Image (cartoon, rainbow, N blue to C red; front, side, top):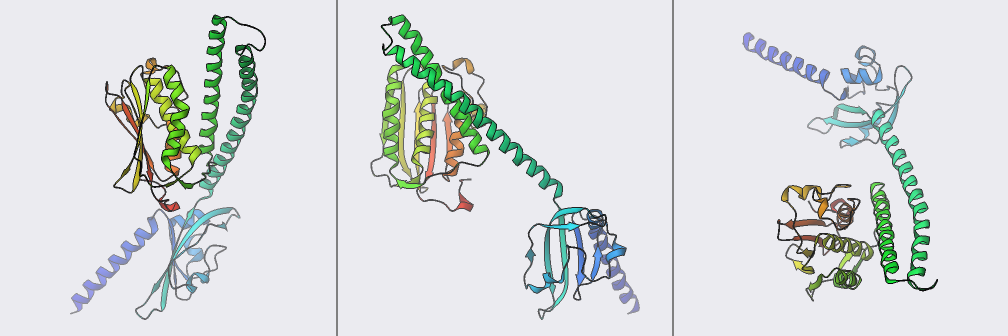
Length: 371
């Protein structure tokens, strides 16, 4: 009988030593308290963060400066406290996040408490610096873009005045040269707009005006805007729209921007053939709007690059116009803000299909995006 008791005591001591070892070396700062709010353990990480040793705090009331207070025992459930400041033994102010849990007996009486805390001072400092850098960058981009837009507008207006013959007659050759200049001014304006849009998304400053409306009407607007451009490129533009589509929540201007960008991309990479815009409902409670082209297609290995910022495919020699590599990245951001996603299907020599998938119902903020 005595040997059995000794064995049990030995096992209990071993378990206690193991628990103490784990508590001592756990990467988070952890300490425990009894029902009288006295600290019963204080691990290495807690010493490291606060400067106070276990010998200095164990057995004392839970009155350690700004960290532990008896108030955590007032709740019947575990508490996740918000960030708070603490003063270390050396008088340094640190920022921590704290988690507290109560331990109760079978009658619901509090028998102990355990707290862990993380020092997030450095992380918060880096986050604050990043925010400042982002704000400075945003202001710089806005300022430079504004300074570029002003002369571009003046150049464009001057070119138009000359092309329209207001300043006098010009030859066909002169008009052709001025038209090329005008196209490049417009392209530069689009590049500036892309950079500005990217900066807004990067800074989290994009807001949507969501209204329930007819997606086909938005597609019609894109069609009417782009058909003249497509005709000049000797391409065909087709619409294949499902008539009975339900109204869905979306920002009209932003979705038109997405579709216009997709059609422009199709134009860039299609020398001949047809570009088709289609819309249809899907069994997954969503609407799919697709832009299909008869261009050279995209290698599957390049799919992952398509929606990355400033990323361009290797086949740049096939481009009719260079770009920033931001267009599809911006499209992805816009679609995701709608709770949807954008996909691509393509095969070399058989064209590409870019599809925008939008939910029929507006999703809650915590579930804004498709997985």
